[in-house]
Length: 206
Image (cartoon, rainbow, N blue to C red; front, side):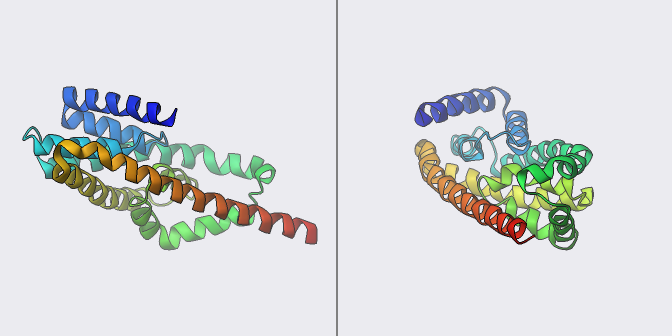
């Protein structure tokens, strides 16, 4: 089932980029960065394959991808900034998010927001959703945009370069990155489990 879904996504990605070129890359990477899990591990390697074919240029592919990431991230950031904090304060207790947790997140993004966004943009899975908590924490938009662009440019360039080097076999990257995605997902689940356990223990003590 998952394999069929990935194949369907790959067909859609190929169709969009083949028809729209750089604009298609901007569009698809924008969708990927707006908290919609459209895998960049398919988008950028195929763009790199088109560089291999001589249709596109590597640095312009990376630039288009990074611009798309920034644009899509603005949408997710805005949702977090305008609705995230009030909703979290109102309903957070039902999912074990306390006002202290929100304050801690604010402090972390104010102090380390740049490196959090930059590194987050280089990690599968996390890169898709990192903009929303940055918006909730009201990280300064110019800093958020700068580090989003820098991290995304490196990510997009690296994936496109791999697609360029693999040539006709660009699609084999998706298999390896899917395994990495699963590992990242497992780490996130463990972290969530520890978070829930800590809060339940705190509530019992209270």
